[in-house]
Structure formats: C-alpha cells, structure tokens
Amino acid sequence: MNFRPLHDRVVVRRLTAEEKSKGGIIIPDTAKEKPQEGEVVAVGPGARDDAGKLVELDVKAGDKILFGKWSGTEVKIDGEELLIMKESDIMGVIA
Image (tube, rainbow, N blue to C red):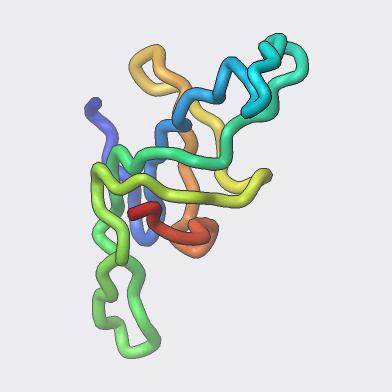
C-alpha cells in the first residue's frame, strides 16, 4: 500500500464479522453490523503539542484495536476498503 496518513491519523482494516451467532444461528448479510474491531495498517508520525514538539502515537501497525461504531472515514485504497481515523477515535488495543 502506497499511502501514509498524516499527523495523528491511522489507517484501519476492519476485521471480518462473524457468520454465526454464539448460539449457532447463521446471520444473513443484510442483518450483519459492521465490526468495531480492526487491525492498524499504517500510522502517521504523530500530532504536535502546543510547544510544537512531536507527540508519537500509542498504536502501531499490526495492533488489533476497538473503535466506535461511527468512527473514521471509509476509503478505498488499492481496491481494499479501509478506514482512516484519528487516534482519539480508538477506544483501546486488544491484547
């Protein structure tokens, strides 16, 4: 991928949604919600504080994260659907 986000933005690939519920019921495509888990693909260099000093991001490429339902902007890069969001939209890293 030839894309580098700027400032405190990250590029995220959504993880695939489960095909079945925990009870074994198959969920049709029309009823599936978009997953709120993803994998960080690329990160920007960081944001600048009031003094102009660069503050690096807490996440890095390869981290599995949890983000808000309406977070980010959907884009298509190299034929792949990805999300671009600010680091502040990320709720946490999944260990």
